[in-house]
Length: 294
Image (cartoon, rainbow, N blue to C red):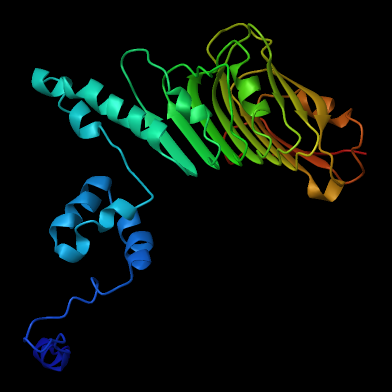
């Protein structure tokens, strides 16, 4: 039978110092352990609050390399006029912080706004940035000058991709890009072109904001190893250069109603025996059709 009193008697008492005070083992940990393994996983407001614990923690939070800026507490009280005045101040703070930051490697932005707005141009001119995640309900306006030489991962989720060449210029300005996911609505007005010699993995989850068919996505990705496309309506995937590696290292999955893709891919040069295309034209979990290219 479980004996709680016996367990409490056997429990080790906390060690005390010469003044009979309980030792603070956490505060005795090295700075890099506290920063990388504890503070970096806390919300920014809680990180700053640790400065009140003791003299040991007073300035420790300034060494944290991960910041979490969240305006949701303000947005949830938007019906109060005195709180809505804080929105411009908060936005200005984030903009200034992005422009002043140096050595940023990962940026994850999630924005839901009621009025049209645009992203700060500083996001697209960060030489040290390696991972960029954009989940926004505003227009993806890319500035005329771009500089993302070290970006390896790009994740974009928008309501509708721009009808200009913004996405094309963005991808072309990332010479180190290896992994990209795109989620959003395509427009039938002009084709969207993706050209990258460094891209290895491409995941597409697209749908259409117009009833007009014929939207076109043009791929020039000679070193692509993996393609996964989930389409909500018929479209045309025009492949200029596709899969530059050996057949056993390539994989292509097409989900939805993108039925023309298999034939288009099969006609590309360099597809050896053994390359397969998986097409799923039904709901999730339904049977798949596998096409072996010869």
